[in-house]
Each structure stands twice: as structure tokens, then as C-alpha cells.
Length: 194
Ligand code: GRF
Image (cartoon, rainbow, N blue to C red; front, side, top):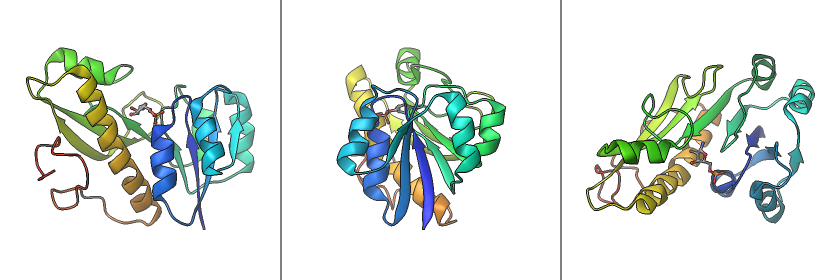
């Protein structure tokens, strides 16, 4: 059975989407924040969870190996020594990288007035939000869209795409999102029929 670790510091909605989607994958939830809601989700999903500091993670990932380490709202910069121990590590970012790196990416895009933003799943490297792009998916911003609606659309697309990407990476399958396999963006990507 494939083994993944999902790391998050906060709300954990991507962790829940991935955990509900994957079948027959051994999942461990890890947080650096003992008060994070992701830990509540782990409890009700009956997924083992750990609270570890960055230092503790060094030892943990030295002793425990995973097919994939998945960042989902993990708010720390991962030092080189830890990244080496983790092995392959991916992240999701709520913009079309390389635009709007860093914090508040959805707000940055909204305030910049772009007409298309989206989500990016990328390899984690030492440079923030800069590793090789694995998958992207667009979200259209029309002129009447309120900021809250954009946030909701971004998260909806994250929850559809991230689980599929994790599964495809674990199975070594090609990743190619087209209008044919969109299943729930509700028309926001601009390309599909919703
Ligand atoms: C997501 O928007 C993700 O793109 C970003 O952090 C947020 C995490 O949300 N990296 P959640 O904790 O998965 O709900």
C-alpha cells in the first residue's frame, strides 16, 4: 500500500478532500500547530495524526519514509535538511504560478484585477512557490465577481484537482486536465460546461 504524509498548519480542507478521495492509501496527518482544525478533521476521518515541530520532523522523516509528502496549507518554510529527508514533496498554491507567489495569493490576484487566476500544484524546492509545475487549473474572474465568490471558487477547484493529482502521482499516471474531465468547477474554469 502507498504511504503519504499530509502536512497542514490550519483549516485542513484540502487534507479532508484528499483523504476522502483516496482509496487504499495509508495517510498520516502532520501539523506543526496543536490547535489546527486539520487535527479535528483527522480525528473524525480516523486518520492518525501527529503534532511535530520542524526539528521533530527531521527525526520523524529520517525514520519514516513516504511515497509522497503533500503540503496542504503548511505555513513553514522547509529547510534543506528536512526536504532531503522527506523525499518527493508537493504543494498547492492558490494562484497560477509564477504569478502571485507568497501569502494572500487570492487577494493579490483579485486586487491586481486579473481576469483569470487559478491553482497550481508544484514540486517543493527551497525557493518559495518556485518548484516545477505539475498541474494548473484556471478560475475565471468576471467583472461582477465578489472577492468571497473568488475564494470559494478557488477552494472548490483545489478540492477537485489536488486529490486527483495526488492519486495520479502515486500511480505514475499522466496528468492532463481538459474540459472532458472537469467534474465540479461549476463553470468557473471558463473552458468546460460546468
Ligand atoms: C489553500 O488555499 C492552499 O492553496 C494554500 O493554503 C490553503 C490551505 O487551505 N496553500 P486548507 O488548510 O487546505 O483548508
